[in-house]
Length: 87
Image (cartoon, rainbow, N blue to C red; front, side, top):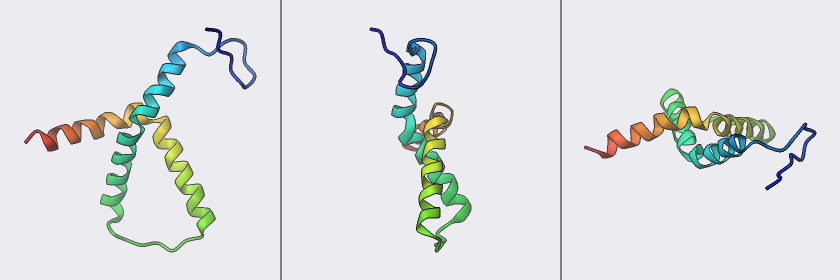
């Protein structure tokens, strides 16, 4: 299979990179779970009234950050769920 990047590049996409993309995609919900719990712990049940465009940009940024770092953040959520449900 000769997969080439859409962007400018010197060669085909490496299989390790494709594996990382798939792993981040599969682990994203657990990463988001950790993020939402941490933010909920810090902010509590506060309601903020802000500009919708600003909130959309912040939401997209946090989603991209959670997806990019999912391989590092998700194990925390998986361990938490494992210990919470094993009792």
